[in-house]
Length: 172
Image (cartoon, rainbow, N blue to C red; front, side, top):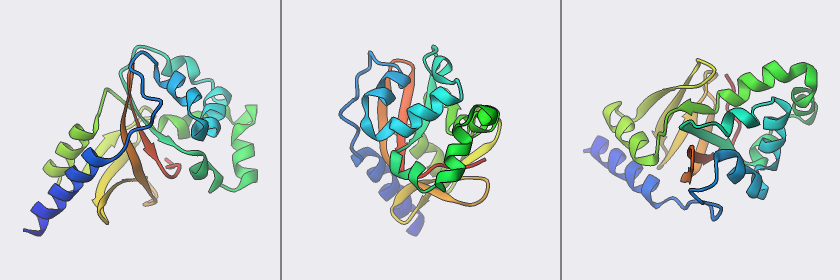
């Protein structure tokens, strides 16, 4: 009974979560990110890692996009160092850890969580594993170090995929 309640509450949360007002299916993932003020740090990082063109491609992609407050939790010196040209490869590895090939919408995540008893593994573009976890009445991403980032908003549809907004940067 507890398992059924967890699954139902997880799916209900995912479908009741608001989407951003920038949603426009004619815009690609980068266009949407640029149009949302709370993604300005993400956009700067995408530019520094030279990933803008890749995320403007056909896709489809699923992007777990951290908001500015998530990047602000990273030490300022560390973040500035990651944005430096000499750390482009490391920054690219972190950012591609936030991207999954294919369009994985909230319904697909919910189905995977149900099939996986509250956990679902996602293979990211950098080849590492990110785990979606149903806990505390929400859906979280767990990175390889065991740190969690809450999925705050789901299903921001783009012409080349979908964006799910997360509260923290996840690290490979």
